[in-house]
Length: 99
Image 1: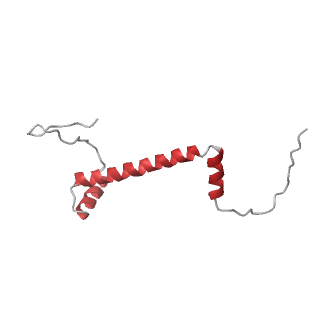
Image 2: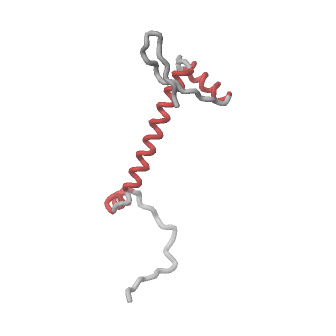
Image 3: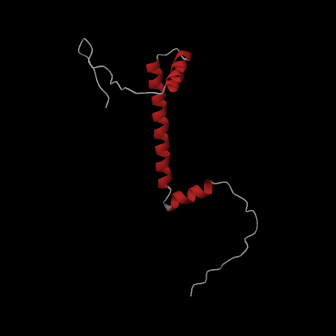
């Protein structure tokens, strides 16, 4: 859980989260921060924001795929696909005849 501190004037500060990173990842983060003239903390914040946005967009795409279970959604998904060629003629056709 994030901790919240108060400043000397009593105004609440932003929540703080402590994260343990492998040394290699920490060095890569510091290099990115230096390249973009940011603090390591600010660079981590930017990367986390982008990661969450990407994750949420993926979750929205999953919800969209689940909505394709309806007939209309299934039909529109089939119509959107590119036609594919068969590799050869079917070997055997089975015709269903109701009894």
